[in-house]
Length: 452
Image (tube, rainbow, N blue to C red):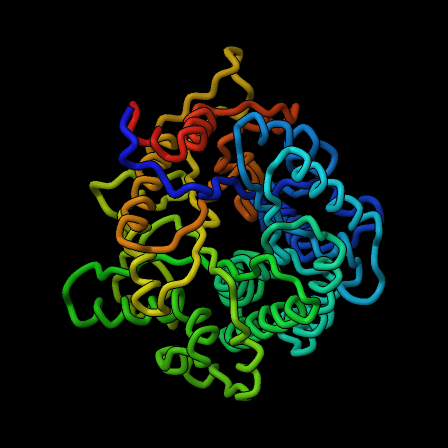
């Protein structure tokens, strides 16, 4: 057996989920509604009218799911906390039954020798705060810091903390293009929401330090290398704008204390001036950055776009997932090298990486779910990650997205990212062949990616 691609000792192999996508029971035991509860219950906003009312029922089945993680050999589980489950109004009153659920989950993970990795915000803002303006209200930075402090003190068994997950998606989908909760379409709102997300992040990090806690704390961003569709000046310029909008909008303020100049040019009169003192919070030092990687962005200039946001160019000789994302594993190596070149060396984690491919909706009679495209995807991307390690990038862990098939936000249950199949009629869990492959990768500390 070749060991050429084994990973460093102690490399953290895990899987990830998000609260609203898997938990179900969004209003149970005193929880308050979130913006996603409202969004999914608004007719016409989600595929098939799907909601997270039951989802994977992880709220009631977490012990079964932890046992499944243990059987697969996972060394870490990245989950998110529903803010409105622990603070139904988003501030003030605390719902102890909500905290108790996460306390039980963390205790079960620790007992199974699985490191709990918690994300404070994975898109599900309490609806009560949205009524007060949500991420458009400057006071939200303080509300978020108070919530963060509450959870830091309540869940002392958490091994790593992330403040936000993918703030770019929160604002691009939720405030600019309306495809995600809260469903706004407003060019003027997007920069304000982005800035307040970063302020909230920084205030939470400072609250963590003030408590004297020493486990790693960081942020999770989605990144993709932007490449031009052609060598034309227009495509090259569009690619630079897309890079500023997605990749640098959230990292430049954290590391450099300022936004890319291209953003003010792109947003024009919709770009506000921000108090310089805000960046004292935003620049709070981090212990790590989590990177979510799914695809590269092949960019072509579109004169009808105010903001260059993503790939609009399908690659004819590439495999594409059910979400029409190009499978391009070398892009993972590229984005990690790009990060080091721009922001310097620091601990990184791949906090999400995975793909939606077709799987049968019901549990097959054979009990086997064969998903060769997902196996190939994981093999290639874990290999690309190792290529980055060989070039000196300090990557300390990898989390597959996702542990379970779940509610894929506005796409409902129509797209399956899980390495574990969920029959949404019976809620039966069945590890796919990709789960078995990933289990072998973990057991061999990466060497199994070279085994066929």
